[in-house]
Length: 450
Image (cartoon, rainbow, N blue to C red; front, top):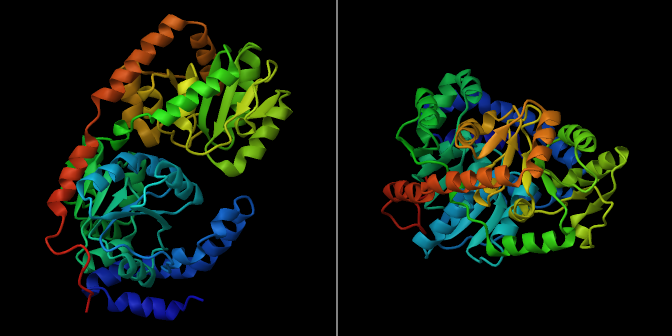
C-alpha cells in the first residue's frame, strides 16, 4: 500500500532548494491524484494483456533482482525505443566491460522485446521504471545506484531526473527527437519543462532541427549525434528466419504491412482485397500483440483466408493473409517481403521506423502521417528509398504496382541500402558524449544524499 502523504513528504525533503520543489509541486500532486486511475488503467489493459500485472512492485520502486556492483541505466519506454537502444546497449557493454546495463521499460511489450534482443546476455537486466513520484524514484536509484543514465528519445520524468541530479548521477537524453507538435505541448508548461531540461547533463539530438527545438525549451549542452536506429544491423538469425519463411511461402509475391495500428488493418485489408491478385500474400504484423486475435477476425470479415506465423505450417495456396503473431522478428518479415507498407502512417499515429526496411533493401511505401519520424521519412523519400501515398487505398495500389515491376523495386532497394549506410555512426558519437559525462568517482559507490 502506497502512503501518499509519506510519499509527498519524502519527495519534498530530497529537493535541494525551494524553487525546483515548488515548480514540480503541481506535477507531483497531479501524479498523487492520478495514481489510483493509473492503477485502474493497468487493470483494464491487463484484461487483454495479463503481463501488465506482472512485476507490479517494480512500478513502485520495489525490486527483487539483485543489483550488480556497477550499473549503467538505460531507459527505453516501449518496443520502438528498445529496438533503437540495442546498438547503444551493446556499445556500452563493450566500452565498459566491468559494468552491467539495467534496461528499464514502461510496457510489457518493451520488456519482452529486450528479452528477445539480449537473450543470453547476462549483463543486461530488464525491469520496469517506477512511476514518477520522488519516493519511487529514490528507491529505484538507491537499489541500482547507476553511475550514469541514458534516456532514449523524449521520455522525460521530472521527479526522476531531479533525483538523479540530487545524487550527482549524469543523465543523457539520447537519440532525442522533438516534433514541432510536441514542442508546442511542452511549451505550455515552460517552467517545468525548462527545469526538467536543465536536469539533463547533455542531449544527443537526431537532427539540427530537433536540437534547436530542445534548446528553445531550455535544454543545455545539446549536440547533434544522429539517429542510432541507422546503426541497427540485421542479425544473421533474422536473415536465416527470413529464408525459412520464404521457403514456407514459396514463389508468391509478399506484401508486408509492418507495425500496423488500430483502425489501419481494416483499411489495408479492404484495399488489399480490391487491388491485389489472388497469388499475392499479405504479411500483416500488428504493432501490439494483444490485438492479434482482433486482426485475425478482421481478415475473416473480409473473406480472406488467414494463417498464423506461429503455426509453423506450410502456407496454403489459397491463403491470402499471413498474420505475423510473433515478437522480435521484424527483420525477418522485412527480409521475406518484396514491398513494405509502414504502419502508423495510414491514420494519424505519427508513423513507425522505416530504417530496418531500408537496411535489408525492402522498398517502402509510407502514408501521409509520419510526424514522429518526419526527418527520416522526408529524407528517405528524397533519396528514392521510399514512396509516399495519400491514403491506405493508394498505398496498397502503389505497392501492388511495385510487385509487378522488379526493376523499379531493385532501384528503390539499392537506394534504401545506401540511405541506411550513409547515416550510420550515431552510436559512436553518443558513446563519446557519454564518456565526457562519466563521473570520476567509482560507479559502485555513489554517495547517498544527506
